[in-house]
Length: 225
Image (cartoon, rainbow, N blue to C red; front, top):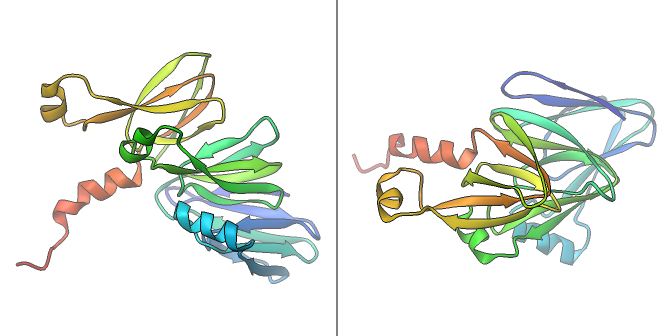
C-alpha cells in the first residue's frame, strides 16, 4: 500500500492497494474508491462489539479488499489534518476516541482506559481512549493543526483539557487542578489541566472539536424566543 494525503482544511488520504491488500475503517469514512474494491462489514464478536460501543465507536468494522490493483480514499469529518502513523510492536499509540480514521488490516484497534479516574472525568479526552497496536500504517484525524513533542524521561507538559490528540504508550497522563481559587474562577482556563509525563512522543491538536462546540453553543437558537 502507498498513500497520498491531499486537500486543505478537510483533507483526504488516497490509498493505492495491490491485489489482496485490505484497509479497515470503523466510521464509514470512505469517500470514493475504484469499482474493484470489495467491502465486508463485521462486528468481531459480541465482546468486541460491546467494547466498541463502550468507547463510543461504531460496533461494526468495514474491511475493503482490492481485487486487483485498487484505490480507496478516506475523508476527515472535521477541519484539521490527517496524520499517518507507523504502528509496530514497540510503536503503539494511544489516541482520543474520535481520532481513528482508517488503517491497514494488520493494525488492531482496542479501547484504552485511563488508569486514574480523574483523567477520565475531568481531562476532556475522556476516561476511554483508543489504542493502536499490531503492525501497519494507521491514519488519525487531528482537530486543527498538529504539534508534536518528544518528552524525555520524567519531563512534563501541562496541556489545556481536550488538546491531547495522542501519545506513545510510555507517556503517563494525569489531571492537575489549576492552582488558586481566583485562577479557577476568573482565569477562564477551566478548573483542570492535563499533565503528560515522558518518556515518549506526544501529539497535541490546536482546535479540539469540544472547544469549537462550546464556542458556538451560545449562538444556537434554543426555541424559547
